[in-house]
Length: 119
Image (cartoon, rainbow, N blue to C red):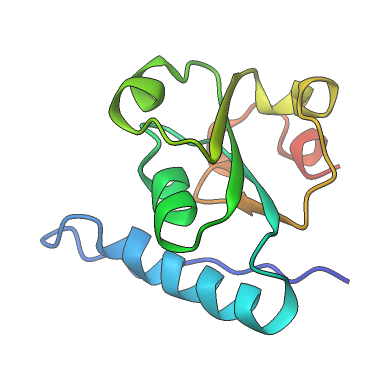
């Protein structure tokens, strides 16, 4: 059974505050439940900041997905990150699993069919 973790606490005066909280939560969960070599599917990677944090600080292998990952590729290239340009509703067709964890950070409200993404 999976566990859903999120960070709704956001302090916009501190750049990246929500990402740091989320990273700490992910780190805690992975250290308790998953091996350090876990593969993570990052849905809605935006500019790649969180994918980079997971790859660089947690040494995870990350598949980062968004409609357009060009900015993420440019800003946050990393040997443990694979970027996929695809709509989240179609991620199953493109992402090569298996994944031990899936991260959806504040993304469901931005997709047309949230249930399709969760399925």
